[in-house]
Length: 334
Image (cartoon, rainbow, N blue to C red; front, side, top):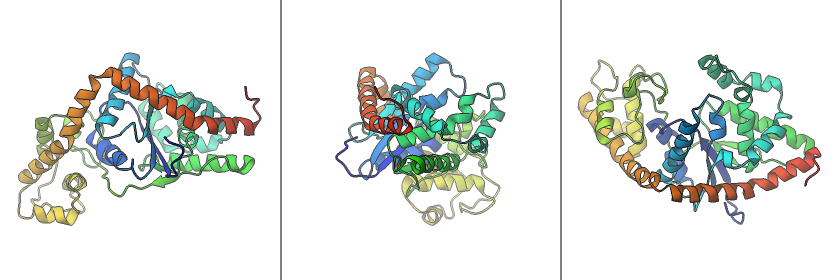
């Protein structure tokens, strides 16, 4: 991340919880590649966040490397963007502890994601899960990010990040940039193909509910053909047609066509023809990523070179922030 550039800083991260779904790709990762020329970008694999849920160590290491390779395969250029693995930069944890001392218990108690995950994992309601948003605040504030792409499920975390930064600045002066949410120009909230009232997720018990970006063309087309729709035969976007609305959103997001343009394209055509077209369009979009991933994942030496260099650059980019914070709160610097 060259410090000579005066571009605005944008930061985002993704957990190594398995192969990205089509929802991850269209909702986030696809947009990230397009931001690299406009912004000073920092993209991380958020493995520290992942351990709020128990992980099998060898599997976590594999998924972390998979996720890093997938970022590169999807168009993230480590020569343009700061691309790194979160746990390789200890500054995140250092800043998180200080920020936790400037975060109110009541603020964390109101986090809806903590309540949701506590219900999903009642046998492991740990403190890390409770203070997760403070670490997220450290991720963002460490690099003085101007913008953070956020979905609806992370909006509350960005709001508390802004509150923590403003509180610290109010005590110690202008230390942190107050981050703003970044709303992408294009993107899609992709829902389950089997239950279009729910977000697409790889944790779906029905594998036909989600598409991963490494699925084969045949798998993708078959999943789209099996997508739940309705008894109507009209390809239009309207209330009560959640399945068709979801497929239209996917098709629109990939082709760049507006929803009305998509509706006109399939006017008078049946659901079968429409579903096949969506499947083929998705498969064609994801094929280069799948091929790039296979090539990159086989070259572990290159991946290590990239994530090692990324961690070194990330450390240089964040060290000044931590030193300033430590000085402000009164720590004796070494």
